[in-house]
Length: 180
Image (tube, rainbow, N blue to C red; front, side, top):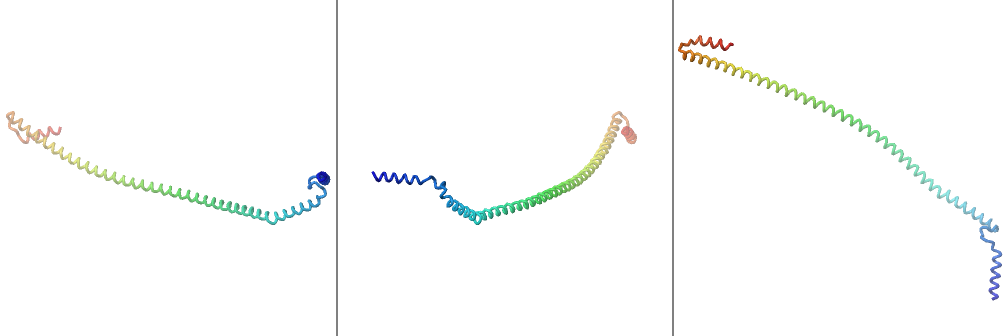
């Protein structure tokens, strides 16, 4: 039991010396401040010599990439504007050529149509003249046939009535009657 009392007394003696957390004990503060400064200086040099230059290089690389990309985009935009302008010019030229081809084709078709119309008119005129000549022949033939039939009929009537027909008189009477 004596050892227990001695241990308890020893623990109580140590308890009297321990004030609490060592960080809050003013006896250790100069040492803690020293190591805090050493650590901050080491972190400062580590950041300024290693980390910040790498971060700066990455940022500069990004900035350069962004600048190059913007320049390339501007260049591509200019090319696109030029391409669009060339496309619009080519489209306008193609439309003008198409209009010229349409007008040319229209003129050629109209010329062919005029030629065909003139040819058809000439054929119609020739056929019409031929038909009129044939009609005139038919009329003349019909008129001659009617005259002959009339002469024959007149001679037959005169002979049937008991008279003698005079061919010159019958011709004169038929000619007078045919005139109107």
